[in-house]
Length: 344
Ligand code: DAH
Image (cartoon, rainbow, N blue to C red; front, top):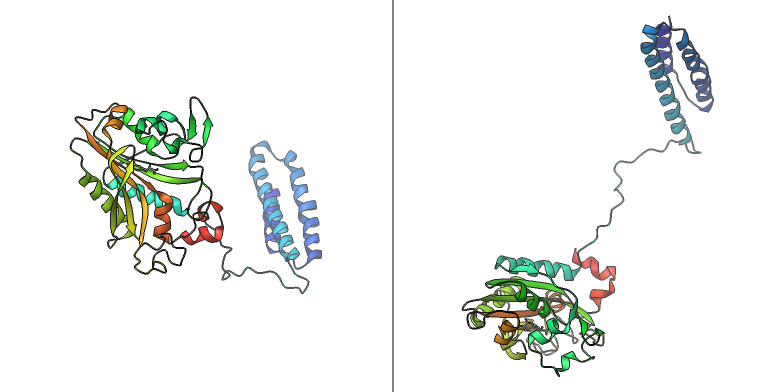
């Protein structure tokens, strides 16, 4: 009966020796063209209650024959002219998948966030396109302050003035308007200035702004915070210098210098060479800071009798140059993979 026939064919197919293209063709004609189609033709004559079992058996047989045919056909086609089959060498190294790396600016931004988050600072954000009030007026810039003029600011619209923000201090203003003291926040982002591009200046760069407002916040809190930041970012032995300075929105104001570890007029050990970023002084300025001017607090709706606060703004590129000894600011935006690959 037909099921027995199927079993016989199954054994035949399994044991059929295909050695070359001719035997392969014989196999195809015998089973795929003759025997199996004949078995399929039989289905209509099978008793209904056996049809299912029979049909499944024929299909399985067909699958077996096809599998043998196609896999042997593949193997025969892979026989090279010399008659050798290709083999897979499992000891060969795999083709490497190239992984991207984080941009050095991103690495430093992440580290900055990590350091300040541990001190309880939250992160805030603001727009890069800003109006005059948030970028200048609320921060106590007098109407004729040179920073408002065309050589520094990229204006997008005039009267009312809309510009690309020149610093992240504009986000400070927005944050104070929308939050109540006590507040402790950092704001990171891109800023724009109409400057000639060189190794030391660019028309866009990144800043991190910090703001801490509460009762009885003092210059001591500011110094300790920035001192802690410098040690975390650059290492224990880092020396920090606060230099008196002026900003319209802070009183008193200071600039923060980090020692680049040099005491050699030809160049420092950290930034190296004659084109060193410290200009041979041994100190690199990384940002400004100070106690928030009471007028700024009032402009933003904060009671300056009750609250005091400090603020700072640091250049991420400067920090990165110092940390990784990078001498040219333009490298950050050129996207040369030879440069970027070094920051794995
Ligand atoms: N906005 C200043 C700049 O771009 C940096 C700065 C100085 C920010 C003092 C501050 C600050 O918050 O208190 O040069």
